Length: 173
Image 1 (cartoon, rainbow, N blue to C red):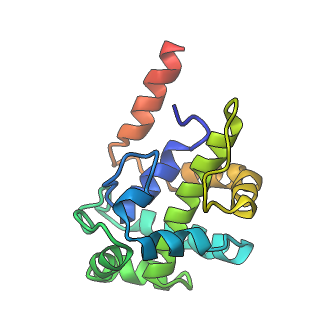
Image 2 (tube, rainbow, N blue to C red):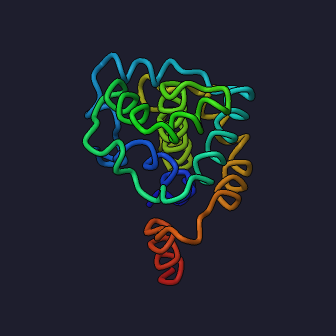
C-alpha cells in the first residue's frame, strides 16, 4: 500500500518511536501542539545531513534493533525523554549535531511528508490539510538519498520485518 515509502525509513522512524497509530494518520495520537510542531518543521539540506549522520551513528550501536527504549511514548515530549534516558542513544544523536527532539521531529516530518508524497501520487490524491508542499517536494527530491541511507544502515543482525513483508508483497505481484 505504501510502496513509495522505503521500509527502512519506516524502520528508522520506529527506532525512535513506537508506531502507536495507523500509518495513515499520525496526528490522531499526538496532541495538537505536537502535530503543529511536526507540520511546521522545515526539512532542509542541513537537517538531512545531521539526520543521516545520526541515523548512521544509531545503526552502529550494538543491540539496537528495536524501539523498546521509547515504547509507550505517545507524545514528542515522551519520546524525547525516553530516547534521552539511553545515554548511547542520546550521544549518537548529539554527536551528529542534533538534539533528540530535533531527531524525533525530523523523523516524524519525514514520515508524514513521505506519506503525503505517496498520497499525491495516487489518482485523485490531494495534499493533506496542514501538510507542507515544500516538504513533500524535499522528500521527493531526496528519496534516492533515503534509500541509500537505508542500504547503508541496514543491520544484518536485526530482523527487519518491514523488509520481509515488502519482499513478500513484491513476490505476489
